[in-house]
Image 1 (cartoon, rainbow, N blue to C red):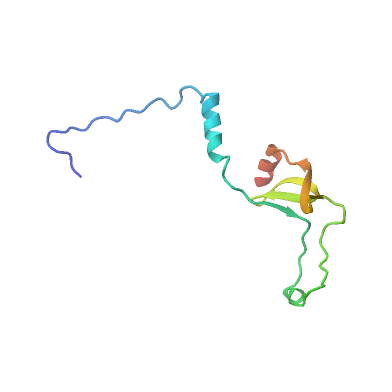
Image 2: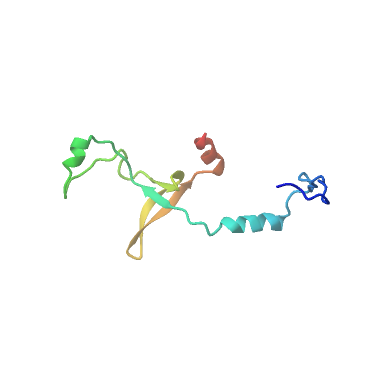
Length: 113
């Protein structure tokens, strides 16, 4: 689009972006935006790798050996990222997990690299 004859271009003005740091309340408001975002929490008892031939032979009653010993803590993942370890508990006739070790945020970031 071209400017009309009476309009002349002018310089854009921007506020200083290196001013004061956000106030405590501004940070709280920004955090509030993500607090209701759903994430997937999953627990892993163990893993194993088997050939497709063995996978196709599985049926009701088959036992698959996992890479973890009985009594070892389970891994707790949030959106696929390990965040804690825990043990299985029963709460009101439902399975739950008691966290025994929470991975520090610094350690989680280190594992991403």
